[in-house]
Image (tube, rainbow, N blue to C red; front, side, top):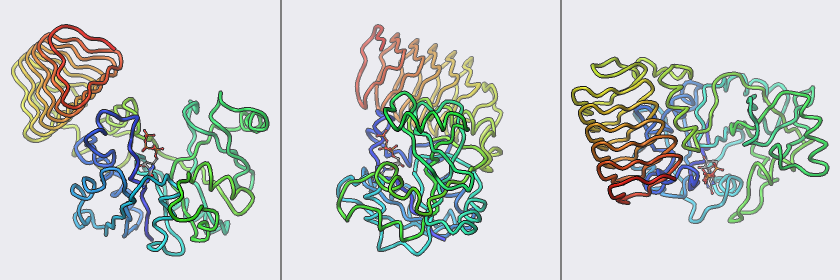
Amino acid sequence: MQALILAGGEGTRLRPLTSTIPKPVIRLAGRPFIVYMLEWLRSHGIEEAILACGFMAEDVRAVLGEGTDLGLRLLYIHEPKPLGTGGALRFAQDLLRERFLMLNGDVLTDIDLDAQLAQHEATGARATLALVEVADPSAYGLVHLDEDLSIEAFVEKPGQATGSARRSRAKAAAGPNLINAGVYVLERDVLEAVPPTGTRSSIERDVFPRLVGKRLFGHRSQGYWLDIGTPERYLQATFDLLDGTVRLAMRARTAQAQEHTLEPAMVEPGATIAQGATVGPYAVLGPAVTVGEGTRIARAVVLEGATVGAGATVTDAIIGPRSRIGSHCRVERDVVLGEGAVLQPGSVVADGARIFPGVVVSDGAIRS
Ligand code: GTP
């Protein structure tokens, strides 16, 4: 079985991290994010993955290579312009076999693909979408499933629906909050519903709704599922990996107790922590990160090569690679620093501020 992984989006919601690093290869708890997905696919017997790239395609290939270490064959295709999720499927058509998986490349999950495939086979579906139940569906569209597991309707994001969509939503509201998990088993003939080559389209909005009533099924998948496309969810995924909430066989490799760490925490090789500093709980230091004396880092990720000066506090934040935080800075509450950003000593950055790559914040306080 082969898998087509969509890895070509710009990842605007994860800026400024994605200003210099494509989303699939941003490090998440010790490895390029998409490696978790590739290992999960491998554990379900997938042998070939086609990475549909666009934005910063060469950087994705440079990090992942041919996939030999992962026991997979990786193929890359490079869209010359963004085609959307439907256009990416059309663009890949020459490489696709009769049945294949298609996945959003920003999903961290351990759901059971074998069960989804078995249902696909049993129902004679042309497409089976993994559906997961979420407590708060406000950021997603809902999917309404019939008793025979066929998909009856896609419902707009709660709060945005009008007219007939509102009626469908009322119907769906009685059932579970099922959302599209971005993991599909497809028969090649779904291509009949995809706009022609070179046309931008969305598989979620333009293709699947056209297939309702035409052997389109949903599989209620159990297990961990999170899309890492926003800073909040990237941090949540990090914490869940540290906790072992997601069953992806890396727990042993993550939380390693060290002097100065409060578990769960992860300190990658080459990171150094000075006297009196504490790292954790829920903190990751990437390779070659340095943390100064007396500094406190909790519920935060500090990516490779960044330095955090003495007496600083970093909480609930993502610190981009090679950025420099001066002594006695405070970085807190959903801040994201891009690659190579500099905070001069004593700066305070808070409340969701995003500091773009290479920007220097001079001494004093700024807040978002
Ligand atoms: P945002 O800009 O933050 O919305 O992120 P995104 O660009 O990743 O878009 P979105 O989260 O909607 O994309 C879902 C998945 O589809 C991600 O894995 C994207 O990489 C992928 N994707 C989105 N657009 C394209 C595209 O034009 N081509 C390809 N190959 N993949 C895409």
